[in-house]
Length: 305
Image (cartoon, rainbow, N blue to C red):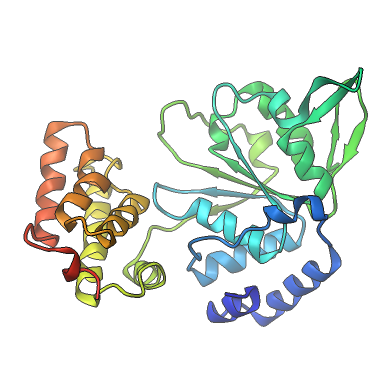
């Protein structure tokens, strides 16, 4: 699917589409990083959210995508990088991610010390879109790099080397989940460097589009049951009856792919959903929800035409 076709299908404001086209024409992509421009496996569906993201990025703003699990934060980030035609750099934050991984480290090459450039450095140099995954897990050393990179100066001081100014096309998109182990509150200084989009939960309409795109050969009745299963689990998670472990859209989609290989839907959904619960009581609740949607006797040809 072409970018223009995708945006028109989503009924994006024509003015925004024109500005995106201008952006793509204005900023070329170095051949060294062209392979980083990747069309997402899954399109993002949601006109209002897309327009908010596009408008912010056109104005040189950085985005922070917040919200509960399975709301499509990473899918949106990947789609925005593709829409703007920019190389993407996925930077996952964890307890060991520090300034060396982001900016770079010294390495010995050709009898001299050189800088082996980190992901943030390369993103800044080539005008990439940096996807800062689980940014609320970043430790202080990494946060100090982000403060300098994301503010109005748009430059990075590399100790022992030189200052690098961010390419005009460089943007950063952060994602964060609440309540995961190892996460913490972002400080105000860091949040102020972003425009924030609070991602809405999946609806029946968006799920129908996702399933229709992912499984065009799926039987309508079966796909409706898988969509209903996700919505049932989402409601139980909202009400505090279960955790979000089984609320896994990727898991459901992966399970359906194994059905295409001939696995029974009941076994597939056990791998993709039920077995992600490690509490016995919670697993029983999830099993009951699954049983109301996915009959044990279903076979692969009940799901795919």
